[in-house]
Amino acid sequence: MRHQKLIFTTLFLCYLIALFYVTLFAWNYGASLGPAGPGGRNYNLIPFRSIYRIAVFSPQLADPIRILLGNVVLFMPLGFLLPAIWSKARRFGVMIGIGFSISLFIEVSQFLFTQRVANVDDLILNTLGASIGLFIFSIVRWVKRRTVYIHT
Image (cartoon, rainbow, N blue to C red; front, side, top):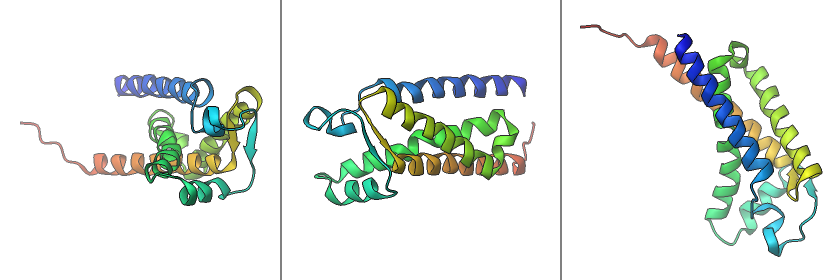
């Protein structure tokens, strides 16, 4: 059991490093429209505004899927890995708070320190992703508890 927790802790730390690298250090050409856009600090504080604009005005169908679904998928490992190493994170309200807080930290950091867009819709999608990760963790845990292992 300790071995399993060490593995999940290592995976979680690797995930956090990758998360902060992707959101704060790697250039995302979708942000501020890349070199063709206005650049500089940009933000959106109106909920669902950019989700609507991306869904309706994207020139290719793959863009909304990549951008919107990407924000959800990016936080799913948080909702799966953290409850595996910290039992308090198995509570829905705790995971919502943690997912929201980490996403808020990233969005504020993007506004203050990078040339990317700080977006309230990212908070919504990232928090949803953490919730989905917790839901998947809960299903896996439920199945694992009900699985009968036969030793031969």
